[in-house]
Image (cartoon, rainbow, N blue to C red; front, side, top):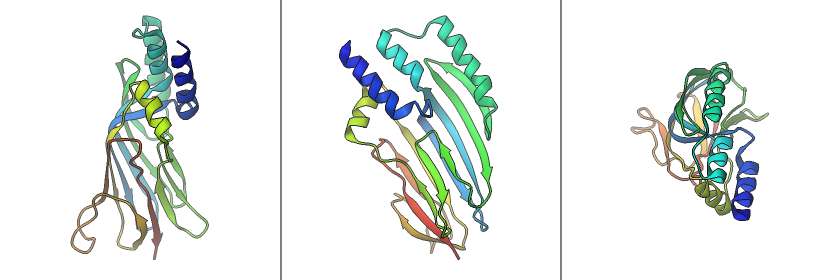
Length: 195
């Protein structure tokens, strides 16, 4: 029991700031020539506190817990960019986000992916570094990540650095920068400047 409590404490430190963890998803960022952008997310997210409760009690959520999860749908539906939100059980939600931001505006999606622009106008797409310990803690909670991220850039964007696993073809005219994210160790990172 003490080991579970330590695991839950570590996981809560790691994840509770956002309380939602993306498990299976497709995400896309379309950047416009003026550096404004649109973010789309379609997938399943886990409510970390609910998952922690199920792990610590070694049982499914109670009916009362499920009612609370359904109430979360109302709160989540009011969030900027939330298009569709539904509770699918076991502390999981089906979530669709479609959010547009002006040039220079930051965005943080589930504390797993962020977009920011520095004073020099360099736009950074990144995810936080996770340690091997973090990966083990998530695994103990039964949480894993399986998703894809695609970023489209306008012609006036210059990629300074990127670790994308796929890139546009034919001199950058067709396709997107893409990442297959199957583990939290896969960190999408890209820096872009505009001409």
